[in-house]
Length: 157
Length: 289
Ligand SMILES: Cc1cc2nc3c(=O)[nH]c(=O)nc-3n(C[C@H](O)[C@H](O)[C@H](O)COP(=O)(O)OP(=O)(O)OC[C@H]3O[C@@H](n4cnc5c(N)ncnc54)[C@H](O)[C@@H]3O)c2cc1C
Ligand code: FES
Ligand code: FES
Image 1 (tube, protein in one colour):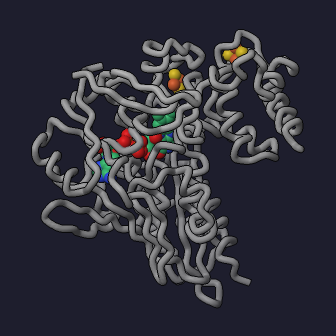
Image 2 (spheres, chains in turn green, orange):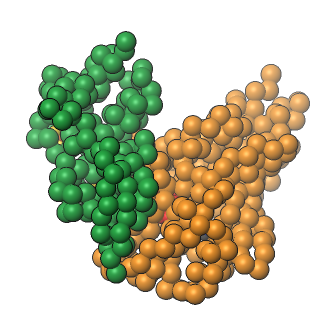
């Protein structure tokens, strides 16, 4: 029962053959081999699978693949420039020690990006709310919040 | 997970004809945050999912003269960022800001939260105390059901197989009124309530209570109103004694059970505590001087 969908993935128009029961996460990892988004819990609890769809952070593990038709999807792989320059949020995560094992990092950064795209000057509360659906077992969150705050300050003109 | 087909009708007529064609082999899907989890946990086995996301004009917040209408496909995030909700339906605002995570709120809908009919549905108590009605539609027509008559049992509502939930109709709260919701949970984020208490109060000029509504979640098999406690409050002034007695009555009206999130005795005790607390917040929000 394969179907074909087309959408924009990290700025590029793409087409894919999918099974209607797949999640967006499955499509990203298995068809496009974009393994930045992780399957942690598979049920919306951990945020490791967070990607941005039409400007909004979502859990790709719960997002029906058929709803991606016509959408714009951004994953962690879409942040760095083609010649390898990291996105300011990624740089800030590295500089502020916000990455330990790294499993939560792609999801954290996508949640942070959706926040900063919408709100250039978030309060600490805004940051905490934005990543409340992203679990990290390593850092204790302090460095992550710091990294997002620093990234927002850097992006000020 | 069982394989299924995924259909995306683009009009309500098309939704109804697909529902008729597939009957109980089909499941409606809105944001999918309940449906996808149930599918993954192998709790439901539909052949077909019928998505409501491509049906136009299902997500809206309409601020009319004496009613506020909320389309069933409105996401919790849209409610959270709406000034109408924040200023006029404060109990609902209290509920949506703490529902799941931003990622969940970006896709999960208010219609899905109510249609799913979990005893813990966070928007249920606020909608109950705001006197919300549900507009149900089918190919045969539409009918309005008050939310207090909507839930039958966990996961069960008065909606018929051929009906869908179109919108919530909420009378605009009067001037001297306020409402609030308290979600008792172990963590602030990403947790279902152990207990939910919503209260709305409409006051008289002399600070006596004109109309009281109390909604309790996870306190019975479905979200309920504490009618006796409401009646007790009507006409009274909000003293400590009155609040304590209202809490006692509400607690007796509930029929909580022991569950992994909390035991029945604890829930009963907390209904007393929270009735007092939430009524006090509602009173403050009524801005009566
Ligand atoms: C990680 C996580 C955290 C969560 N946290 C909370 C929480 O804190 N509080 C809370 O209350 N819930 C929570 N939920 C549950 C869920 O997100 C909500 O109940 C949500 O509002 C469901 O909406 P939906 O659009 O995703 O519904 P769906 O999953 O799409 O649908 C839910 C049910 O409603 C039916 N349905 C949907 N729309 C309609 C309609 N218009 N007419 C008729 N039937 C319809 C579907 O057939 C299905 O049976 C959480 C879920 C997850 C995965
Ligand atoms: S894998 Fe999607 S939220 Fe955990
Ligand atoms: S860095 Fe290891 S889970 Fe966050």
